Image 1 (cartoon, rainbow, N blue to C red):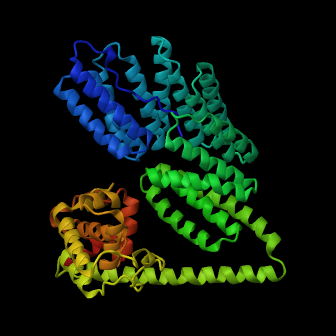
Image 2: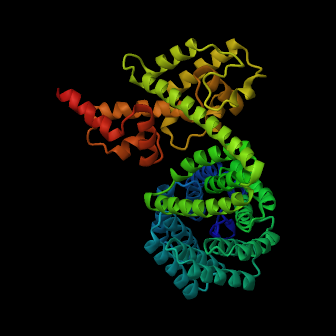
Image 3: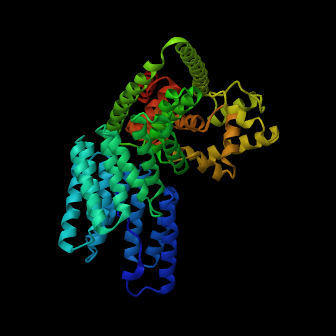
Length: 535
């Protein structure tokens, strides 16, 4: 977690601007900053779009520069790193012709260096950070910039697995924050230090550092920073075997992460809670958390560059070994006498249950493959026929991957006819609007477009098609990808480009989904199709 100097729009340093325009800009920015603080980054990006348009219409260069800068910062938060870098570089180019805007240039460089770290471009990250140091010294800019630079350079050391050096750099940021009397800077520097202690397996020191940090949390602390602090506290307590105490901060971190879509925090919260429940013999909760971890892991990894993904996967594997070692040491004390028999029995039940769920999921995948193999009808026609062939009822349990899901719909207020109407509405929407081409599409976005609640949309997808939101959307994306792979006019398109054009966020997620639904990788499918054409 980096401390980012956030470029706030302020009209006091502009000249000859009419008061009404200034007030509109300030009000728009004030509302937008609340969205950023609450973690509503997509809404924030839209607000910055509006601010940029307003600035263009009134020829306000400074607000435009800062709107682009802030939007780039939000893109970084949601993992859209290419867009983030592109917008930052756009601002830097504008600033080349502007004199006296050194602070704005420094802010852009700080945030750009953080984005470079996110894609593991540590050389450019370090160069940008060093330029900020030079600007701050030469132009006597706010020393708060250097706190951000220390965070960036600490991240460079962290990526290179030099945890001791990273700790030293983060501590410099903390000391400077204390000297400046900025509690927010101190808080985030302490979180970075705690993260280093966790990597160094100095868990009691991490716990102590996080406790100090959380005491400093202020109204200015973002939800993301608070979620991260609770995650670190939960991890530290877990590793010192304070399992009961670890539950509360991990649950709080998970709740904040789910509400605000903090993918990385959500992933690690589920991971540690799964292991925690297993140790505490809450096996049903352990299975749920493990499944949630697997899903959130894919969501998070799909947002990363290949280099960053490699590092994260390596860290996940290492943390898993540590957690498993911890679990084994606990279990050794419990594998005696009659208690051992009961544990084995419960674990066997979990294994059998999981095996049945996997078998059911495999059956559904085979049905989806058959659906996509039918070349004589459009996907809309095939899904319409599928919905007609299904007995829509509130207690239908035959097609759900998770046997508990139908419980949510047994008290449904929708009549069968209303569900049929919703099914038709969804199919028309998918055909006309093609929302699946947006790799950032969420269930809430689709529900809003259809003027439905998320719960009703989920119910109709499950009851009408036997699919959850992700599976339903991926069917359309795979169908789109197949068209592009079969199109003789698109032979020059690379596999990665086809994935992006079909709505997938990365080549990895595209390959995985295509293999799952088609039984071949995209490359294998294209090659096989070309062979058929030649014959």
